[in-house]
Image (spheres, one colour):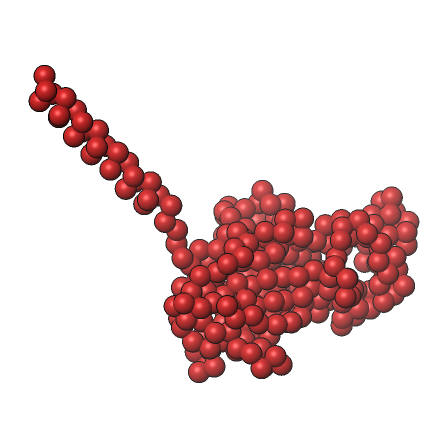
Amino acid sequence: MKNSIKVFALLTVLFVFVSCKKDQTSVQQNPNSSNNTGNTSPQGNAIKVSFNHTSGTNPLLLNTKYVNANGDTFQITTLKYYISNVVFTNTNSTTFAESKSYHLIDITNPASTQFTIGSIPSGQYSAITFMLGVDSTHNVSGSQAGALDPVNGMFWTWNTGYVMFKCEGKSPVVPAYLGQYYNHLGGFSGPNKIQRTLTFSFTPTSINANVTASASSTVNINADILRYYSVPNVISINTYSDVTMPGARAATLADNAAGMLKFTSVQNQ
């Protein structure tokens, strides 16, 4: 009987030990994965990219009245856009490209406005390049997951692809739709494709992103809604109140969507 009790106790200890090992294994994550988690404390060999949304010098708030360069009073109700194909340039001219690099920024979800990219080789990085939108290959790649999942409400059809930038709001200058307006920018090929590739040098701040095994950095990008209506084109909200298919008007607004974004600073931790 005593021997049976000893055997049972030994088996119990072994079961607990194995279970603990399984639990430890299950929480390990791919250090290069980035699923819009909004990690506020990136570990070493990482760069966090953070998007701050403003109306001029003020924070951009939903359902709050602003006035654009055309003199139109407006309120923003939705602002979502894709950032993809992120590449960092080292001061030695080498580059690091994030794999599976697709992020959906949504101002209603603060966690989505920043993402961390890991497994970056140690070095000094002096520029960031990314696409505003989704590359043509992934517009026609069938059903996808994560940021590219159609459940996110940013996909039309396999023929027309993704809504790569979505801005909706209200304005008294729009007589139709009860004053609501819709800018859904898509179109991944031809002269009116709306993807825009942007490169921001960190040189104006004289601070490079310092990446080591024990250090990481944050790159801050500002998205100013007033620039969306003024750079490079001064936009009348009424004229562009219903842009919901590919075409020349979507391409014009895509230029302004790119003009909305501006590099502000690098923070080294």
